[in-house]
Amino acid sequence: MELIFPDIFNLLENLHILVYLGLLVLFSYAGGEVASFLKTPRVTGYIVTGILFGPSVIGLFHERLVKEELDLVTHIALGIIAFSIGGSLELKKIKALGKQIALVNFAEAFGAFLVVTVSLALLFPLISETGSASGSFWSSYFPVALLIGAMSSATAPAAVLAIVHEYRAKGPLTTILLGVVALDDAIAIFLFAFASSVAGSLVGHHGISWQNFLLAPLSSILISLCIGGVLGLCIRKFIFLVPRREAMLGVIVGLIFLTSGLAIALRASPLLANMMLGFMVVNFVAHHQDLFQVVEGIEEPIFGIFFILAGAHLDLRVIETAGWLALFIILGRSCGKLLGVRLGARISEAPETVRKYLGLALLPQAGVAVGLLLEAKGILAQTPLLEIAVSGVLGSVVINELLCPYFTKFALTKAGEVNQKSDLK
Image 1: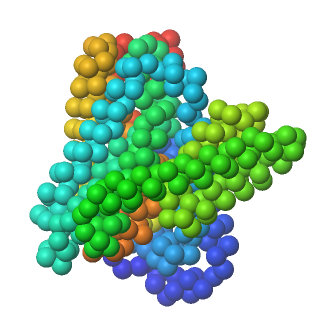
Image 2: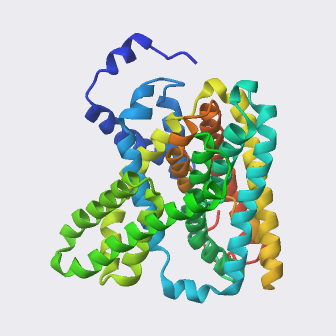
């Protein structure tokens, strides 16, 4: 799609990058407020704003800015997201979750991963317009399907928590739902670390071997965990030197930056490393509540910029093909999670309401999936399927964010766990 007012925006391409950062912060606030007014998740407002002002529509944020110049912002946001996920994994809570949550979580996450990976690997040759130019199955279709499959295992914890709190839901379904959501993104990051290592080897034409499928992923995961673990131990030893709460922000942000940088330098996963850092802080560092609270104070503007940039990556020129891909991702992910919940709930002897409705409550998808997508761009860039894959995943996230929160509400209502005295409209 051609840009609107091309002469004006060609001049804007030479503006200082701080101008664009200022616009991104302001537009993220405006997009979030519009979304809240329309009673949709704020992240949807961010993504739609990014699509609107991105290269495919108005073009205010040009392609070089979106894909290259603001790449550092993406790494910063991903580090904070992963750190927050690690912070939700308190050992005392994990121990109290029980067999039902563990089995259901494993089954639904791997169910989505396997169904999406297999279905897309088989369907890519049919829906891709690049035809034979896409390369072979093992060097192109399968690696991209593997990465998208790993992204599809994630759930949007913010959307689920917002609905549970809004309707004051309580009961066995709600308890297991919150437990599964707490662990879901952690499993997604582990799966992605494995998938990205395998996909990178296949796209790089290193062939298929035990090293590609086991040793390389395990090495990447271990290095990531060591980076986060060692830095977590360091902050545990030296946190007493930072008595002022105001100074904690600089310390923890510095550690997140350091963790991400070391992981990237060592070709490990910065997401997994920061998740491990958050895990160490929440479980082994004194006054960890203060550390997470100061980080929460800067989350909204950073996440707003991050999701606007994510939306700006949507390429409407491949929307016809990407639309089919988004549909297949949604169907495959939904089938995998619904079947996985049924299997996990049956094996763990969970209540009937959990078997019937938990799968619907786990369909929302947003932040971590988008973060993993942008993290995978370096690998996807080596295939001719980059634009189709990015647009397809973003399309599926936008559709999920618009529709799936209503499925979560429906599941809680049908299970009889919505507080009828709450302020429902």
